[in-house]
Amino acid sequence: MKRKYSAILAFAISAVLFLPIACNNELREEEKPIIPDEEEELVIPETGVITMTTLASEVRFIFPPEADIITIDWGDGEESKIFFSNGYYNIDHSYSSVSEHRIIIAGVNIEALQCTHNQLTNLDVSGNIALTHLDCHGNQLTNLDVRDNTALTNLYCQGDYYGQLTSLDVSI
Image 1 (cartoon, rainbow, N blue to C red):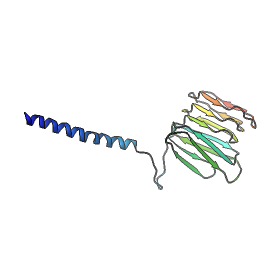
Image 2 (image 1 turned 60 degrees about the vertical axis):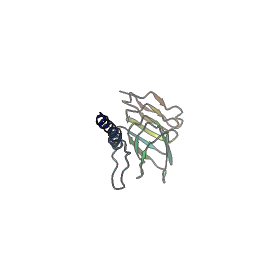
Image 3 (image 1 turned 90 degrees about the vertical axis):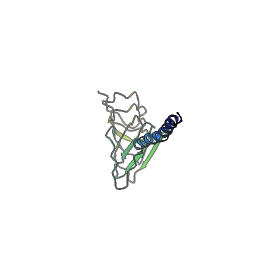
Image 4 (image 1 turned 120 degrees about the horizontal axis):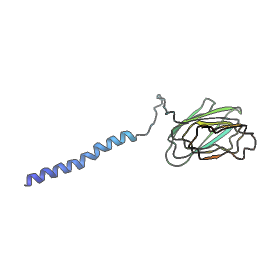
């Protein structure tokens, strides 16, 4: 009888000791952060693309914690890759020359964007259908494209003092 209980006890102890290790290794592989090597190019799934044109010498964007990974092509040969953790993320960029720059933001889970007071003349968020909140007030917008953004519930573009919004595409 003692042998039977010893065998059951040995099996239970080994199950308790080795089963979590096997499960944890699988979870760790899935949860590893994406960190590119210097020689390796980071590939971001095309789930959201936002384009804009600015006349400013410095721009600032605020992204929510829901965003996962984004890349920003600043239109001057520089690019930023951002890996989000917790909290909102502010990103600033300064240009060496004051001229028109086309900015392209691509990323995963970009549900909100604040791009206020950046002297934007054109803003196209139609390529990012996950967007629910857009605050672009205080710019010089003449064109705002929110076409196909069926998830968009908050749009703030008031106070556009300098521009004349001549085109607003809200078609689905």
